Length: 206
Figure (tube, rainbow, N blue to C red):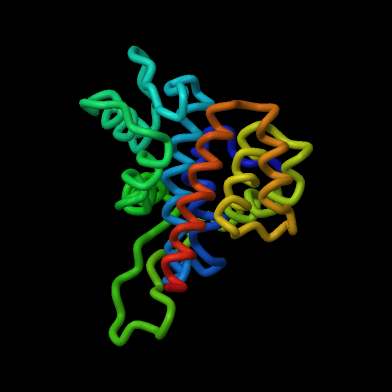
């Protein structure tokens, strides 16, 4: 099953990977925040709004994406006083990424924020209710057949693998090989996400 063509890559990543099946944010998977920022950057790259040169992200001036969260990210990149590497943008945009993306999903009627309940469950924090579970289910099913799908779904599956959150058994190296035929910018973004996730895992061991 294909996902809604109007859905954002970041929104799909949040529904299918960042949140669990009950709309909760796994507290121990903080590295997934890099996946959210990576998804927004990849969406901009696939839309032709940004490209990469020698490891740096460069914004194309002119058109503006319809998605509000993507528009905010693009404005931030365009207004930056100096060029930043792909990894720097992945890290910088991961801060508050889920809030920006969830705001859009709430406005679309896909998610609703649940009130805080005290005491919070140990290890998990219930944050959202998924109102359109069929959309999330469609994305999850599509991840398993990404190799035969659109470039957006291939990118989404590769991103999940880069964040070590793939459920299809696809290794990161295999996903990277799939996306390599789509967009060099996406490959650089995915590589940066994988590196940020690896460093986050490494720091948690020390």
